[in-house]
Image (cartoon, rainbow, N blue to C red; front, side, top):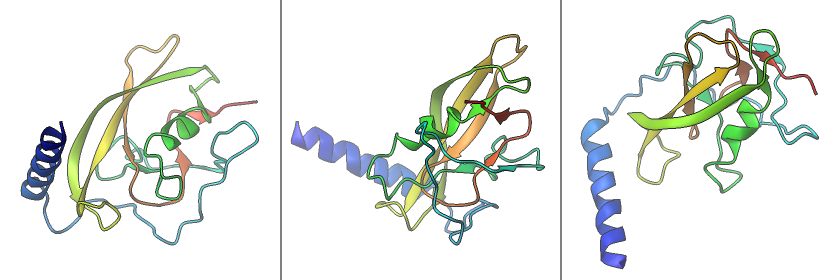
Length: 152
């Protein structure tokens, strides 16, 4: 089992290294952004709405939910999505579809990282949306165009 795990890790590093340019295409990384803050409802405190229609919808403008201080790479996604509602306050539903879009990152132990792609739906919606999430980098966390903050 250890050999299989080691082989899988080496294969992953090789694939990432071969697919990643040395220059990142991400446009919205800000290492000086404030740390993420949790509310009493265990969701992120978000105070800004993005005016950029690419924010979250384009792989070069992902939603950056840096996780390194939590030591858990899957805890911040629900903290982000559970803070949001549909355009008229509808409850949203989200699920991870895939990883994609390798990019160089000094915050990954492999020197490269992948974005996560999530499908987001709400009742009455005609077509689900896809949002790109980056767990490795930081920026100011905002509400993407077409969403609003959930009322608690």
